[in-house]
Length: 232
Ligand SMILES: Nc1nc2c(c(=O)[nH]1)N[C@H]1C(S)=C(S)[C@@H](COP(=O)(O)O)O[C@H]1N2
Ligand SMILES: [Mo]
Image 1 (cartoon, rainbow, N blue to C red):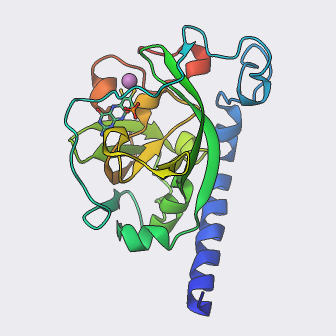
Image 2: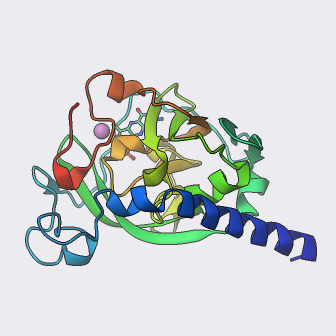
Image 3: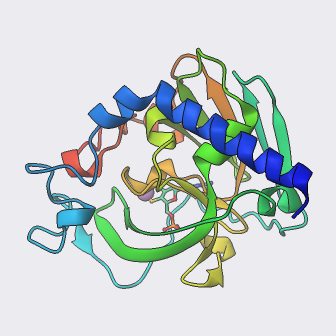
C-alpha cells in the first residue's frame, strides 16, 4: 500500500479515536452486552443461563424480515452517502469502501419479533470508521440510516460508535445475500435488529433526534434487547 494510503488510514484511525473519546462517557454509561447482572446475560456471560434477552428464543436458521421490497443492487451499483451534520460529506463506492480498514466480528442478532440468531460471523467495515471519514460536527448526536427500499431507522452516536457495529458484506464467509440486505447492510448487535438497515445507501448525521420507520410507529428509539426495550 502506498505511503499516501498509509497516511490516510492513520488519519482515519486517529479521527475514530477522537470521535470515541467525544462520546466515551455515553458509551460507558449505556447498556452493554458485557455488563454485569442484571444485564449480565450478555456476550461474555451468555454461556451461563439465561443465554438470551428476556422474551427471545433461539433460532438456528436466519429468518428474513423487512418491508417486502428486495431491491437489486450489485456491488458495482452500490454507493453510500454520509451527509448532514458532518465536515466532509462522502459518497463511497464499492472500491472506496473496500479500501478502508476491514473488520471481522462474531455477534448475535436479536429480532424484536422474539427470535435470536446467535454467533453470526461478519466481515465489513466499522461504522465508526465511516463516521470518522466524514468528520461529524460537534453537535452531531444521532444517525438516520437509509436503505434502497426507502427504509429508515435512527441510531444514537454512542451506539453507532460501538466496536461491533459494522457495515457488513459477508456473513459466515459468504457474500451477504440480497434478502439479508446485500450488497451491504448495517448490524447493531447490542440493539434489536431493526436498527440495522439492509441495502444501506445513506447515513445522515443529525443534531436532534428524528424517528425512523418503526420508531415512528411506536417502537423504541433506544431498542436495548437486554432491557426488553421494545416500545416507546
Ligand atoms: N432496508 C431495510 N432494512 C431493514 C428492514 C427493512 O424493512 N428494510 N427491516 C429491519 C428489521 S425489522 C429486521 S428484524 C432486520 C431483519 O434482517 P434479516 O431479514 O436479515 O433477518 O432488518 C432490519 N433492516
Ligand atoms: Mo424486526
